[in-house]
Amino acid sequence: MVGAGNLPSRIIDASVPHNASISSSSSAISGTSPVDSSLGPIFPPRIELPLATSRLPVTTPVVSQRQVLKTNSNIIMAAVSSTPSGQMQSNEASMNSRWPVKKSAFIMSLSMALHFFGYEFSRSSILSLFTSKTVGFGDSSWAFPLAMSCVSPLSFLMLLGYGRELGLRGPRAALRNSGLFCAVFLCLSGVGVSLLGAGAEGLLSSSSVSVPIFGDMTPSKALIWASFVFQNSYAHLLYTQQWSFIGSVLTAEEGATLFSAIAGLSSLSSTAAGAILSITVDKMGLAGLLGVAGTTLVVSMILADA
Image (cartoon, rainbow, N blue to C red; front, side, top):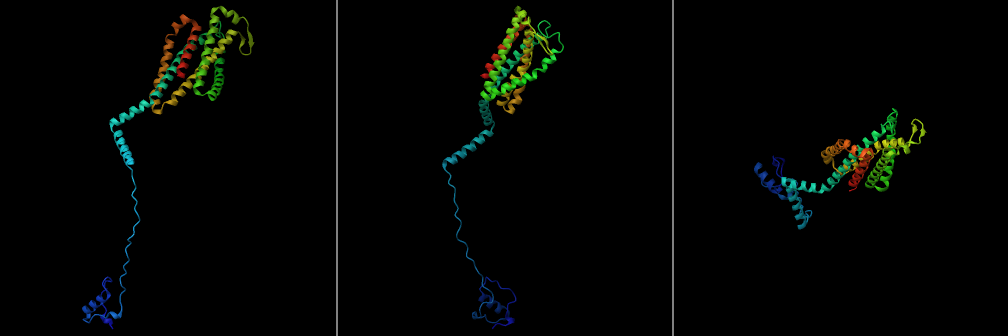
């Protein structure tokens, strides 16, 4: 038996076999003989857990040669596009792809410029007739404001007709048909004005009808009144369609660059028409101005339809 005095004064590592540790400790401290193994273990033996030898299977993705080539080509294209030459090539490709769109916008810009060119002729001709004291309302101070108040209702009716045409036949046919309708009306007005200038004023002014507010309304005055109201209404109907097309095909960046040039082209056409107006009216008369307006509007619609 081992006495209390024979116990070791230090903790023995459990990794050392218990018999050897007890024997060496007892011998070192008290000089006694090693403890018999029949006494049993004093310290619990070290428990060694077996290491896990099984591992989860690791699957390596199989990448085909085609995928590798595709990835490499994407990397190369990205590197090329990041270089200045690559960016220039991509910009050129983008410009080439947008060229048909810009071409159509340019043709529509020419169409709108011709429309304003003809509008200047029709405006000057009908305004001169309306303010005439012989065939128009030059002696009536109430006529001009009353006629201008009729422009908005007629514009509303024309927009309703345009909306119906748009729903039935689409924007292209709606612009073409509305433009041709306006051109025909201007030409008919020119024919009526030419009759007045050719000595038919007796036919157009012989009979009159008493109309409230208007007083005595002759056929010539009715023609000039209708032409004046229509001339101030049709321009809004056409150029809004043309601007709508241009704005729908151009991007925001392109519009910021080109819209000012497009508006300037229309202003230049109106200025050119005003510059040659006096020469044209001396040679063709007021009826000729309306004929020019109708003809340019037909050409404008041909360009718009192209």
